[in-house]
Image 1 (cartoon, rainbow, N blue to C red):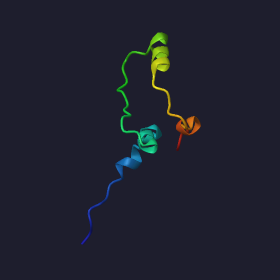
Image 2: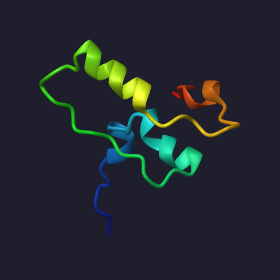
Image 3: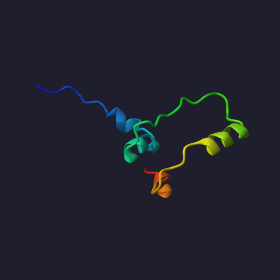
Image 4: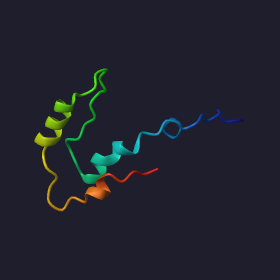
Length: 70
């Protein structure tokens, strides 16, 4: 008796981008990823987002946050 063939693991074929694990890596409960829109931000909108965004908590390792894993 033979067993049914096993297909490829879908997670290996289409792995999630490394940044998807940032919330888990940093213990964040409220991180979400917006759905991309067909419209780019204006310079003013991008600046407002940067300037009015919440600051990182003291002790945050900014280089570690932006580290990219393969």
